[in-house]
Image (cartoon, rainbow, N blue to C red; front, side, top):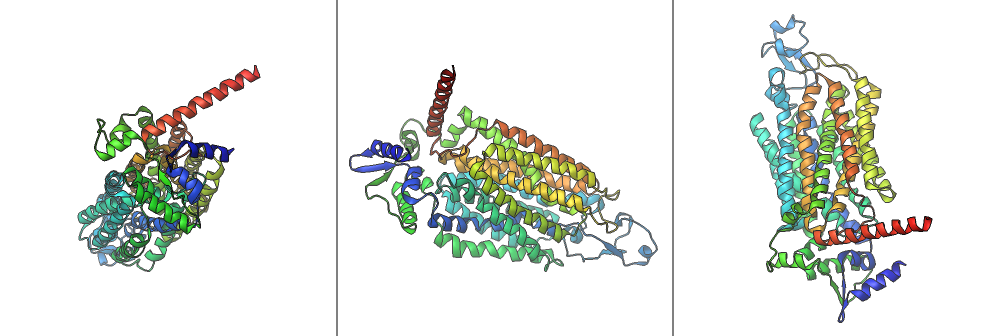
Length: 542
């Protein structure tokens, strides 16, 4: 049946002596749905997610709450104070030294404790703005590959400069710049990885980037522990990696997306990329093959000719079904972003060894990626996402039962209390579910929108995720005095996100369309075919 369908498609698209096919048809029939060439491309592109993880999670250690303090003066020696807030400066010191974290070095405790949340909050705000900028650049003049390159180079520069921050204000400004810079890595790597993959493997391949993010998550405690006495050293070490990657891996070995090249009018360049993929896979493209242009409307927009001068993004906001989808994706993303990043940052409120707890959460990312990859092969996206969000919410609410209230000042841990092991286990399960939901939502978004606005839509999703993430540090700081409340908020938001996703259409085994017009036309035809099939089924039953 599939061979007959392909034969009909091929006969329909033969113009003169040329065989005209879409990128999807070329990938499926001639290049291979997922061959060795695509595997190498996916791995090389996804390596950048390690740096994305480092940038995001480094503050768990650099901005960590010091665990203990000691008296150094006579005035302090005879006191039984449970907190440093009532002590005079110079009569006490942090046990780990004043350079172990930004909180210790700049005294972000007591009446200044909420300043500790500022760098992480503005980092996510920078990511929010950067997502919009890089999304437009990647769909427009830069393309996917050059957007990743620019993001990696800027990330390396801003991380290195952060290590020289003289105070909390400059530090926050540089964290904002760092968040802006790294925004292009996540959105562009995902799109660049999946646009040359057949529909059968698209969901699983989309999970590879999250595996490398998990690898970065797991490696950050290993880098942070030897540098625990100086937070600046940690920043300098992780700044080297994206620079090396950009020069020696990304520039020479990664290819641009043929879909982007085609949409921008470079059909021959797109064919060259596909030929290279096919050759590495041991296959060959027909000599008379040419790529089918997405649509006449899109051709006019690219060439600058014709009456319709509206950009794809403008047409997106004028298309009712696309706006409805985008709104639901962003609302869902806000809740998941708040929970996913908030739970990671909230590990210090579990009263376990920080390095051990972060390592546990990092290891839970790996089964989350594996489960997501396996489930995406035979489970609907909507069902998998909503179930993961519900499990996250239930786990967070259960964590309330085992929460322990902090001291009344909520600023320092006055005595070393062991956290609850059941709480740690439940939190780990909840984080694994949140990670699965987070990963699946990205794949879902890629499949919901066409090529000429896909990067923009993924960037909009990332903005909503970052907006939620930018608020979560405030809840983490508040959670130092009321851990149960923070878990309650995380749980409720996750459950709401799960319900919101039920209003999105299912995309499993759907093709990737090139333009809004093409997608609207094809989905309308599919909907009509489904309605006719249901009507015929009812008639047969009667």
